[in-house]
Length: 301
Image 1 (cartoon, rainbow, N blue to C red):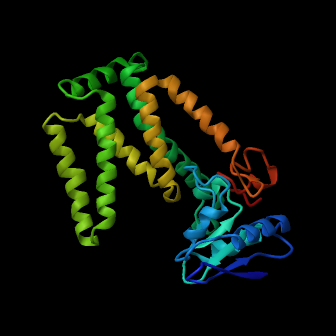
Image 2 (cartoon, rainbow, N blue to C red; image 1 turned 45 degrees about the horizontal axis):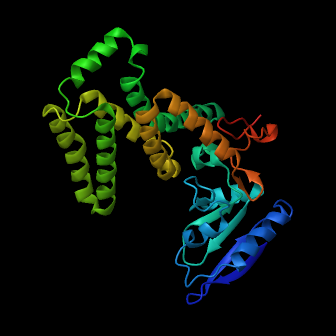
Image 3 (cartoon, rainbow, N blue to C red; image 1 turned 180 degrees about the horizontal axis):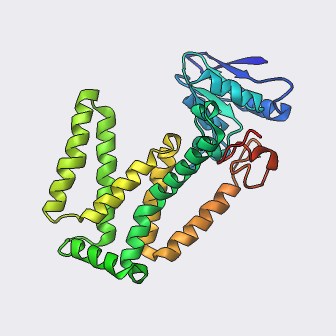
């Protein structure tokens, strides 16, 4: 079924709501169409212009609307009962309802062996956890919980951080912000210049800062590893970057207890978010046994 709407006071953009009649939830379809029909905006240039109107918590840092540029992904999600929103002139199609585990999935997963896909998805999940928690945990250990480290490792860190003018928290925060600035600059520069900027920023600038005694090598390695792990799930980069900074600030203030409390708060907060009646943490909170076969792991049996 294709239902068409005109959105935008000046652009009068055609927006199509597409779904399978016998698969999609009619109540969800009606709610999506009601929200689209009530959008009051001067113009719709891209799909993302209307995504904010489809979120249950627009100010949340967590993604609540799915998106794709690939027809096979859209059709696959429609077969699962989701609804697609196609905007005239935009290559991005929005999909609803959305669950968080979708960002750990890739279209290539469905063309590979399930055992390999399960390994890759678990690897992506570990990468996301490391990206968010690694800098904050490193700071918390250095400031509050250094006794849990093996003696040899602790001596190594003390030797490399001796003479650094910054506190561990300030040092990690400085490097994280520096990496974000380099990423933003690289994103907006021409491609051939962007590669040169990456080399200068990552190698020359980082090595020079360590040699000059401004930052320590372990700190640079921790933040660099966190930045690399961040892109194991590219669709989660925006929210995970913000979370990494929040965890870092809390860890520098409260240590490991702050990390534990913040993790509990985020878990409770995510449990409170739903996408048109579908919990964003499904199929794990609540547990939906039938959908677990295509969750973090994959099982066609």
